[in-house]
Image (tube, rainbow, N blue to C red; front, top):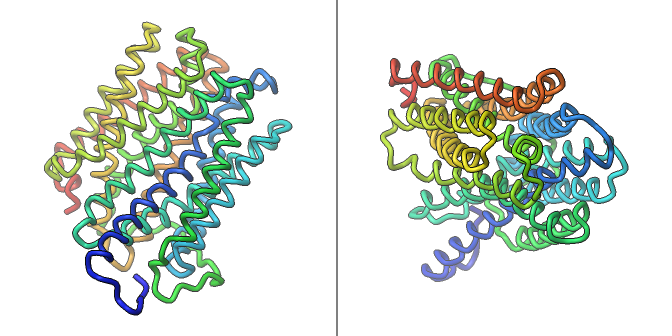
Amino acid sequence: MTRTSPQPPRGRTRRGRRLGYTAAAVVFAIGMAGTTLPTPLYGLYRRELGFSELMVTVVFATYAVGVILTLLLVGNYSDRAGRRPVLLYAMVLAAASAVCFLFEGGLPALFAGRVLSGLSAGLLSGAGTATVLELAAPGRKSRAGFAATAANMGGLGCGPLLSGLLAEYTPYPLSLPFLAHLALVAVACVIILLLPETVEGARPRSRPRPQGLYVPPQVRGVFAPSSLAAFAGFSLLGLFTAVAPSFVSQTLGITNLAVSGLVVFSVFLSSTLGQSLTGRVPAGKALPLGCLVLVAGLLLVGASLWAKVLPLMVAGAVCGGLGQGLAFRAALTAVGEAAPPAHRAATISSFFVVAYTGISLPVVGVGALTMWLGLQRAGLTFTGCVTVLVAATAIHLVRRPAAARGH
């Protein structure tokens, strides 16, 4: 925290910090909401521009490319430049992404919008989380950790819910969602300017120093199963974010965009709830239990595609989201605790790179399979493959409990 003089009264300091981390969480959520805002709209873009389901997944996956590049190149930049400047950069990128979609004239604009959105999310992942935690008083660190989690996953879930409602019930489905987000970004920028800087001696004009990928040898036994669980869980999130609206409309025959947005919202809300449960489950059991719940969710999603029943898909979203959230937070905790302090940031960034690879590559595979098998069979193939991966990871963790605890 930066030094202030004179010191305010003790009660006032606590109140200011509490408001500070809550406000920072709001900024985090607004930024992340923009990254999933186009989700219910891909079908409209498909009809307007005439591209395939494969192209939908490729457009979506460019977001993950932006996130990964940011994590690799400037993931630790806010440690030197300060949190507030990096948060403002993220909001500028989010606004630029919204403008690309607002004035889209074809696929190049969609690709540009998704890449800019990914760059924004990459900056927010580190700087947003750190700001929320650092603005919390010592006795509220646990609450602040959950606030950061809720802002991340809750923001991702609110994006499709907002755009689905506006696209379905207003006359400008491809404009109003992004105009609404631009207004929210403006509010977020004002909040950022009012937040205190938490980095001592911040140098906003310092040059980034790319950190690359690094996993210390002593962490690899924990890192491998943890990152596989994160990969699989993010694959489920990617499936819902990229192609769930197509499943709902084409396979289940429901064309209401608000319903599509609500289905996607449910998986992220459940992920947030799952992460909130991590502290109540013993450390050695949280990760394998999360994997098993994720398997159940994947089976329900597969059953919904086979039977063409919406309630089964919602149940799969809820169950899968709970498992993903429980497993993800447990995996992140295990990796963070096992990493030596000198290499903790690089190790966690490497963990997120694997996770965001999971949100992109498998989904592109679903899009490619759709060209030959159709959407229903491609979805069933996807759920089958990811179920095997998660089940194998769970069996490994049960046999080697130390890997789940980070020892």
